[in-house]
Length: 199
Image 1 (cartoon, rainbow, N blue to C red):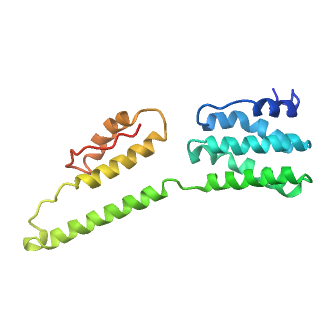
Image 2 (tube, rainbow, N blue to C red; image 1 turned 90 degrees about the vertical axis):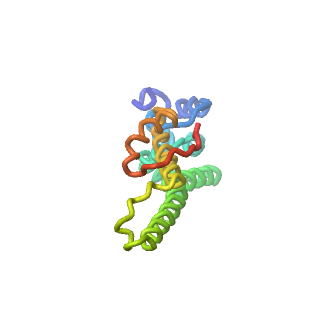
Image 3 (cartoon, rainbow, N blue to C red; image 1 turned 45 degrees about the vertical axis):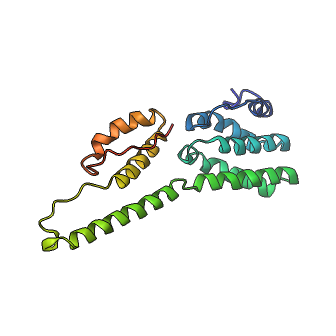
């Protein structure tokens, strides 16, 4: 009822500050909390603003996927920036600055970048090895049947795809793997080596 304006914003923010989150925060939970946070950040009460800033930062730390936070960053970050620059209380400004810096870092983070870079290097190495093998074959490689994808490359690709799919959160890694192997078999044939089970 606070989001609709029927209750005292300070009380709503205090009540929200007392909630203990035991699971990772996802986009639906953020969607429910965002109106209360926005009202708390717009409040003229410095204590309410400080609590709203702390809640925003703590929820950002509990977000399981950057994609969950990105839709809400455009509404939270300007309010946090305004508080960090305009509020008279230095403690509130410091908390707002810390929350703004953390949320902007999380919202722009690319956590899969390192995995993609490693995968790209492995795939480029495999392509180079395949090109060298074909160039050294009799007749320039025209008479050589294409070799199956090396097992290590195939498993790295499959593990990466499964990790990305686990971000959707609806199935286990084995369920995703069982669905994806038939789809990727035509692109990455020929490996039956073991894989890492991400649970």
